[in-house]
Image: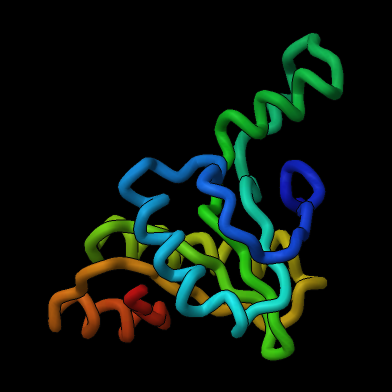
Length: 146
């Protein structure tokens, strides 16, 4: 099953508005972009993976896709460069929730977006304890500070 809606790649610019990012996440993301945008060629926001596609309800295809979108997992961002695709979760502080989300989104992307090629996972955060870094590494999630 591919992403709910087609991925919309765009140039990397700071806009101050990114779907599904809280205000606290947005601050961290803008700092990261200011530091690291040159490392990436494109970004996509609001990528929805998974979700429930009800087969038994008497609804239109558009309504079915809307249902799937509302139940899907939404990635904070996808970054692309010559090395491949990186799934990004953004949090003010590294936590098990952020690490788990990044790892889970990578697994879903490998299943649903095989044409993207190699996919890695990254958690962008202002602070990460040594324990968080250790756990993230065990799950193949890179932690980046802005």
